[in-house]
Length: 368
Ligand code: V47
Ligand code: SF4
Image (cartoon, rainbow, N blue to C red; front, side, top):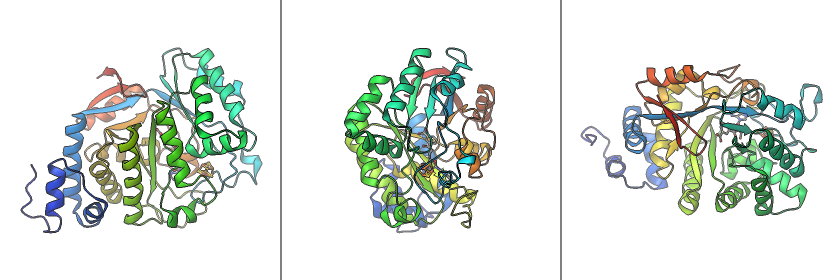
């Protein structure tokens, strides 16, 4: 157990609770996040990572497909949001084109396709059900993780079906799970400033709850490092922690670092590596019912990802491939995000950890 000798007296009982594997409250979380020295947060997070996942660091072999970058919404942080007005910079893939991106890979070469894009006014529920069915025809074993709650809310509303009905239809077509995007920051003081016109916090949470009830697991994200304050971070994590208590349907929590390229909030400076480490460490401590904490390497960069493996992170997403643009357009670290399995394995081993290839549901495929 960590020595509490030199720790500020207000933090001592909180540190004791964490060390005894007890849950900390929002108030205690706020104090810990804002007052604890980096070394303390890091050491607590690292011991939780060791306890929950040993030295294993997970990755998978996946590709990302973005069906379109045209979007009816106007999130201020997004490099896509201007595109409905400026269609020349936009793309809209046909079902055939997306299937071709998949058949480029031999059977078994990838285990997951992640499909997330802009919210196109003409690509509706039926279109996406057809897409999923076609993918399943050509690659029946491929896991399809698709559509953020933002996309789902829009497609269900347009198709005049409930979230449950829409999700059931997608599940019957072959969709396996939901990605975690669209969560941003739940607190309305911030949500109303950065993404006021898309799905509400309540809708996001309801869609994930419905998915969990249908045995479709999902992920959860949080966009940090822009105009939010620590209280908004705690509020966000607390809402996710409560839903996880209720359903147990979240696989992993993914903090997404705000990148300031080409968007309406470009004047906001990106936060430092120290802030990234504090945020990830604190996430590992506060999100006590999430088994996995993921650093999404194309967004935050390979070197930072490697460092975060000592601060609570035990999952680094996958091999990806260069079909993803939402991050590169926003100035992400990696402008051509693709890593071979060998490169991922080396990145993890160089950090002193054990690389484990997983499927979407965290079943082990191969330990290296
Ligand atoms: O919700 C958009 C983010 C998200 C920016 O579940 C930005 O495994 C930073 O769903 N700076 C969508 N972030 C991404 C997403 C995702 C990504 C990786 C893994 C998983 C998963 C899901 O992208 C959006 C938004 O938070 N985003 N613009 C930006 N400028
Ligand atoms: Fe559209 Fe998503 Fe970008 Fe918002 S973050 S503008 S919903 S693509």
